[in-house]
Image (cartoon, rainbow, N blue to C red; front, side, top):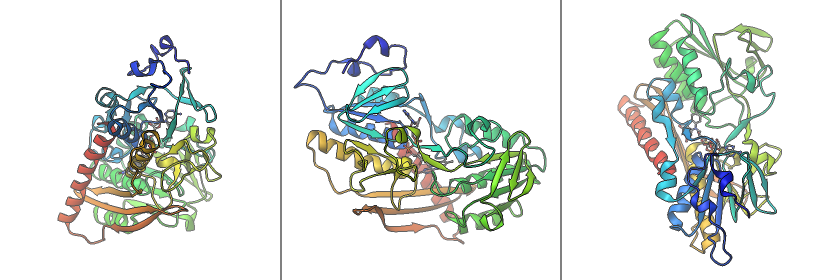
Length: 421
Ligand SMILES: Cc1cc2nc3c(=O)[nH]c(=O)nc-3n(C[C@H](O)[C@H](O)[C@H](O)COP(=O)(O)OP(=O)(O)OC[C@H]3O[C@@H](n4cnc5c(N)ncnc54)[C@H](O)[C@@H]3O)c2cc1C
C-alpha cells in the first residue's frame, strides 16, 4: 500500500497519524475500513475501536463533517427540536477512540486487492470492509422528478439542507394553501417516517395556517402504525389530512416541479409545497461494488452481517436486505454491533456471541402524543426473523403517550452517544 502523506493534507483528513504510518510486516495491526459514517458506520467504528482497545486500525470514510440525523428531523420540522440539536460531528470518534476519520467519498473498491479509492485520490487497504452508505433514489421512480428538482420539490429523506428547505417552504405557504406528499413504495427508509412527517406538518399548519390542507398520495395499500396515525390526525387535525391510496390512483402519480402540479391518475392538482419521497435502493457505492441484487439492496448473512457475495465485506443498515427488520437507525445500530463483534473475532480471535437484533421506531403525532412499534429478531439461515414485537394501541391515555414520547428522547440521546461517543 502506498500512502502519500502530502496528498492527504488539505483533503479533510481529521486524524492522519495512524493512516500515514507505514505497515511493517509482522507488526501491522489488522485494518478495518468503514464506508459511511451514519447510524451503521459510526456505531461500527466506535465499537470496533473501543472494544479492540487499539488492536485494530479503524478508518471511517464519510464526506460530511456534520452528520444530521434523519431521526428527529421530523421533530425539527414540527418545531420540537432546533436544527443544531440533530447535528453531530466526528471529533470524539477521532480524539476519544482513535478512529481515523477521513472526510471524503469512496468512489471505488477493488474487492480482490482489498483496496478502497476515494474521490480525493487516495487508496487504502483493508482486511475487513464495512459498508453502510444508506439509500439512494431509484431513477425515474416519480415521473417528472429527478434530483435536479429537489429544490422545488424536496425529498428531505436525507437530513440536512433538504430538511431546512422543506421546513422553510411549509412556513412560507400561502394562507389556506396545500401541502402534498408523494409517499414511497416499500421497501424504504423508516416505514413510519412519512406519516410522522405529515403529523409534524399538520402540527405547524394548525398553529400558523389552520385553513391549509395536506394531501398524501400513496402507492401502498397500508402503512406502518396506520390506525395510530389516523386516530391521531382525526383527534388533533380534523379535516386537514387527506390520503389517496392505490385504489384511487395513488400509485399512478407524476409531478411537474415548474408548475407545482401533481398528476394523480390523470387528475391534475395544483399544490404549494410538494414533498416527493421517491422509491429507494442501496446507496450507490454498494451497487458499484457489486453487492446488490435485483432488488437494489444487499443480501447479507443473517448471523454475521457479511455480504453474501464477499466474506471480507460487511453491509449494514438501510442498504441491506435485513429480513423482517425495518430500515431504521435503530436497526442499523443493531446491525453494527453484530458486525463489530464478528469483525473483532475474525481479526483478533476475540469471542463472538450469537447475533441478536432489535428495533423500536417511535413517532410523534402531536405534543406529548408519542407512539411506538418494535420487535426483537434472530438470524435464521434465510433471513433475520422477527421473534416477538409490540406496538402502541389506539385509545391509550395521555400519560402513556407522554411517557412514550419521553422514552424516545432518551433513545435519541442514547443512540447518538452510541454512534459518536
Ligand atoms: C424523516 C426520517 C425520520 C426517521 N426517523 C427515524 C427514527 O425515528 N428512528 C430510527 O431508528 N430511524 C429513523 N429514520 C431512519 C434512519 O435515519 C436510517 O434508517 C438510518 O440513518 C440508516 O443508517 P445507515 O447507516 O444505513 O445510513 P445513513 O445513516 O444514511 O448513513 C450513510 C452515510 O454514508 C455516507 N455515504 C454514502 N455514500 C458514501 C460513499 N460513497 N463514501 C463515503 N460515505 C458515503 C453518507 O454521507 C451517510 O452519512 C428516519 C429517516 C427519515 C428519513
